[in-house]
Length: 146
Image (cartoon, rainbow, N blue to C red; front, side, top):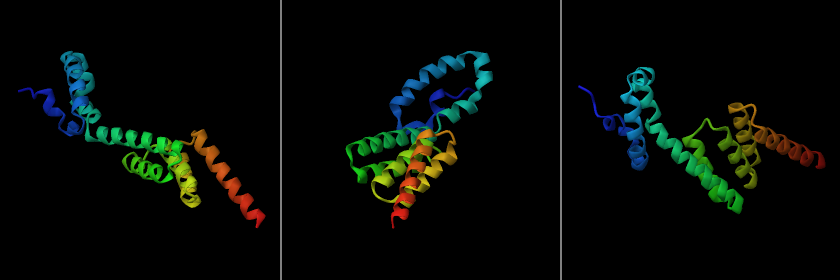
């Protein structure tokens, strides 16, 4: 007995509109036997797992944190970007923006750690590399002036 496609998606309850938009195209795709064999139910479940909701929430928090940074609201930026980092810990871009927010809040040690994490996640993140280099240069200049 075949299970209805909607029963495969219990973890997507946090985004019912997204769930509705995805069910029909998936039904069409899975109606094709070769596609069903190629994809398999496990890939569909993985793509629509609760992690998808966390990623969506992380993207919203990242956007809100970036907007707060642009407005100069450091407190809100830190709260949103820390939330984004907790939801999506493997995002180099989130870590870079978190470093910028820490730097704006004058927490230079935390900023340096965030930039380093961003580079550990993506060694080609030019913005994080530039931000880390600039932070270290400012710190060295401040220590040299003492």
